[in-house]
Amino acid sequence: CHQLYTDPDSGLISVAESVGVKLLPPRKKITVMLMGNHSAGKSSFINWYVEEHIQRTGVAIETQGFNFVTSGRKRESLTGNATLHLYPHFKPLQEFKGVSEYLSTEICTSRQKRFSLVTFVDSPGLVDGDMKYPFDVDEVIMWLGDLCDLILVFFDPMGQALCKRTLNIVENLNERHGDRLRFYLSKADEAGGESDRQRVMMQIVQELCKRPGLNKCGFDMPTIYIPNPNKPSRCVNQIEEVCRAIEKTINQTVQNTLNSLEKDCELISEAITDTLSNDRETSFRNRRARCKSCLLTLLGFSVPLALMALLVLG
Image (cartoon, rainbow, N blue to C red; front, side, top):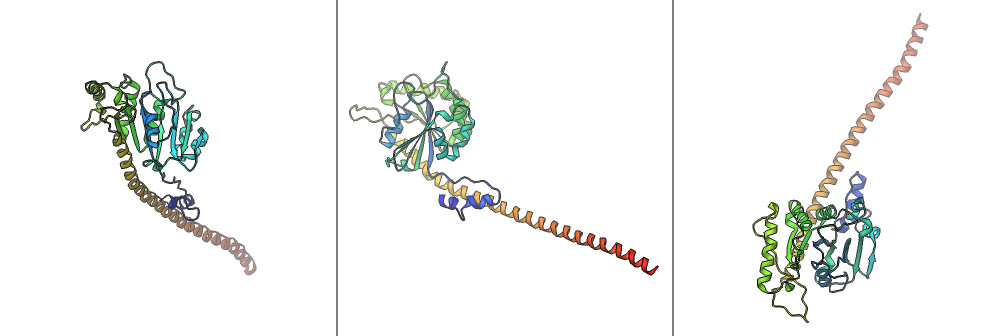
């Protein structure tokens, strides 16, 4: 499908440009954004999924910008401008003041799970209070939410899960793209015993249900944590649910890509029809103009000839 768009001779993009329509090729991979408060385990999940240590992890705020993690033929790290060249869909990000300097891409060679079909967007850890970001983090996350195929929201049980900034952004994202949001209680093995874990989940659910947009039927929040063979836990680990959500999104995106192909073909067809109609109209006007020109030319010659004839006859 990507080749149908990008073929230099007869691809949809070159055909569309010839009739004044701008198209972008479909993305080869789905985009999955991870968001939540700082130290919620977002970067740790990416490292676990790709089975490589790509992202820095720790209790401190390690991710200060937006990091794209994708698969490639060789290990590379790209900065802001190179990231925007790699992802033309995300070029409007440079319109947000201060964001370009805080964009980066990590390309790794991992072929684990379905990583070859996924681009992860690791967002900055969200905190309340006096913490200042070098850009409008709320607006950027909202903008990215419009483009992402799946949004994973991680709540950790260590007292930061009820961060107002996180809840505000989640509520706004839910209004636009409620079908893309998935909620998880991360680091569930650190929540203590089962009763402590249930208490934490109840607190989070109560806080979410206070928001009218998030108080909905069928709410689900699986408990997940990064498995550690050296630190066994009795806590139920539903981390495979995240993998299944990613796989389901990949399968849905194939169908969405075919739908986009159909819409783009219709758009090009309409543009071609309009162009041909305009050409016919222009051609008709040109013929009329030429006829008028010929008629006026004949009149221009006939008037002097008529005067000469009158003079001769007179």
